[in-house]
Length: 347
Image 1: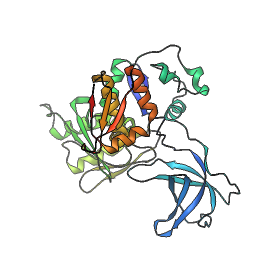
Image 2: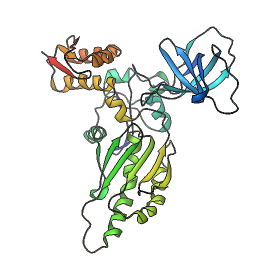
Image 3: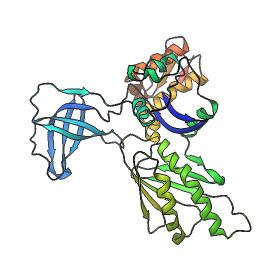
Image 4: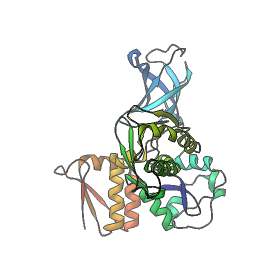
């Protein structure tokens, strides 16, 4: 489900909500120390069957032992091939209970808290059914489809190229280590010095670019290559950059300009980024279901690689909702001849 915060057909905030695959940030567990890893500065912790996380232990942390019962909170979602990150709440817990104590807030709850005066608008009974009782008084009666402009803005978040004010463009490239953003400018207008025009174009595009970073939840190390500016002129972008970052609730910081002239930003890595969600096995599997609904409504059989089928088996709610909208059962079949995350459909 897409959750968009809007005002006057402008997209202010955005999140993907997959009830079958919660990010678990804010969830509290009664857990057990599996293994202490001094070389990694922490411990691996068993949260529930087939679920573990990493607990960093800084100087001053209480002494823990393997097998000890503790209470922890998930402070960072699993991402980048790493499991969830934990925060210690209590040690020496005298409880036989293991597993989840309190689930963390959903993306809907987080956005509702960030935008406390916003009205909730659902576009279908299926979406409305997921609104918890605590938020139902904020819901507008009935069902309203996404405005076309908002739907287009949400679709654009899946593209690597961002169109910015003044004809500027930015190409976003996630890598395992960092997010690289390359800015491009249109030809400078005649009558103005080139560097002056390029500086103004970069400066004026920064608020929209920082907004895209927030909408896509890009996080960790972010390096931005401004368009057409000499390295010495890039220092002058640091002040407008810091100003453009202020509305972001994760309080990202601009660290300066590297020796190569790249503007360096660090943004808290708490939730998975939109590119990671869309390109994960689960994201690729849900894309197949969306394709069927939009372009192949006569589908009765979905054949896919083993990885794609495993992802769908772990989200039976999405498969059932797809079948409900199709008006017929949708059968799933593994085709070992297909690459892991590819698929075909049959009527």
